[in-house]
Image 1: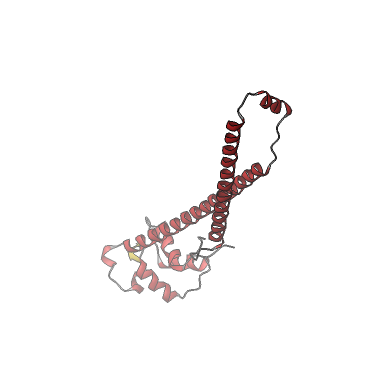
Image 2: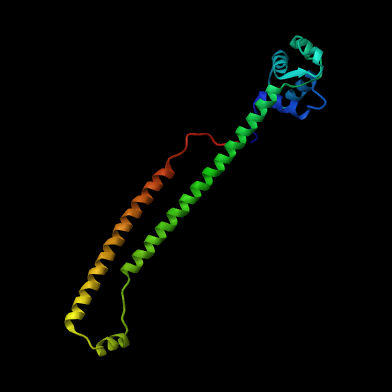
Length: 194
């Protein structure tokens, strides 16, 4: 459904589009009525007088009733108001797009972290198999039982350390995922662009 813009903005845009030739009050009135705005003719004359000025420099100081009969153009102040409004709308749309991209990036980050944790856990929990030829090669090696025992104990100790570190990393990652999920669930209080 099309959202009708503010009456003041419609008046400003109509004048901007006809800067070269000027605007008659009657033309503005017909345009506003055609757009479906419900405003009295007297009120529109006041808006016209505040927003437009006569193209004839000698007739700019007359009453708003007299100026309604002259070809007029937007005042400089009104032109700048319209420019500011359009810049605001553009910035609002850009901000909305940036927010969407940031949310998508956070979701991708959460998914990749989750997949990494699952993959690491799968590797940790997978069985290790040693082929018979590897066992035979180990048996044929000459070794000292004391050195081998020391090295095996060191390897076991290192593996236990790695397992503890992985579990610590997994807990930290899960906390970060929960924290990110809470941030995503919070909805922004600022409005979204049209």
